[in-house]
Image (cartoon, rainbow, N blue to C red; front, side, top):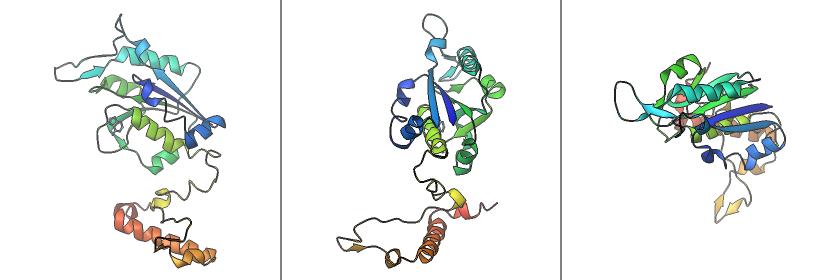
Length: 228
Ligand code: ADE
């Protein structure tokens, strides 16, 4: 069982991603729970302000300390987070190892950034982990949070039907997944490798492993240098 709280000023962006497919199944089975907290009501003044100009000048607004802190403290009541994660392009790059590690958590808090960013004092004093989902800039952290929840949620035992299938994903063991085929074996003259029809499981396993190695060498040689 894993619980995610997500702080967002665009909660609508997170309505759909968790209502389908594998994540939905995990939620329905009670293995995953997700709560999206709208930051806006914590905003200051009659306009419920959550951002302000940056000290020192410069374009772009910065998310303020007070609304964020009040929101975090409210969510923290009666709960201990394993990590308080800020989604940001300058965070540590997300990978399968990170997903595996985070999937062992009980409670995670995800903070979605917007505008020019989040007041550094929250990052220094409250955030415990900063994560980027890749070297590109999104308009906000919401889509990144959805990616994080998906990659972690599917690893929770019982969420996938076939328990072994997460273990054979690309990146587990630092290898890309092998090619897969389904019926028919001949589609418009495009055939499948004979070995897959051989019925010899150990030969098929070897073939798949060879394919994984070859694919990884060709497409992601950097993964083969990662060997711990
Ligand atoms: N927010 C904006 N861009 C992001 C990225 N690449 N990863 C995580 N959060 C982000």
